Length: 170
Image (cartoon, rainbow, N blue to C red):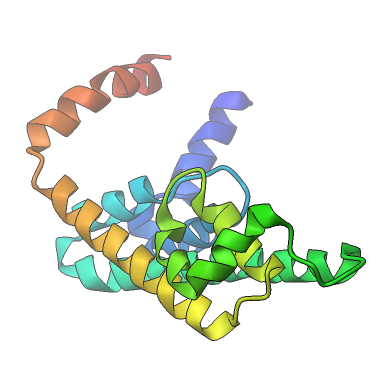
């Protein structure tokens, strides 16, 4: 039963089959406060279909940016629900000083997702937050995916060989 489930999962989530919707969903979810990364899915899809580079990068950027805006609205809503006064704690004042431009760095692992939630908490204007984080996320996807495409296929084959052995013989 477990083997059948794993096979079903692999077939269902196969990038060539469902492709761009998977890229969008994974990018969206990975931008929320859930611990997940979308770069392997973006790279994997572009590796399978190099002619889809910019469409994939742009779609991942849109999904990731919208996921970041979920964090923004959660932070905004949390402040509205729990703040007794409108005073911003000193720890958050730095973000208010930097403003929406700080959200360019929303792509950074570990700090990027909470950064968008804090932007909502300190009530930064949402449109500039959206634009700055989109710019950072687009830059990240385009640069990282392009760099990974330069890595020779022999490297990826060698890296995935143990996994392939486990899946085929496990």
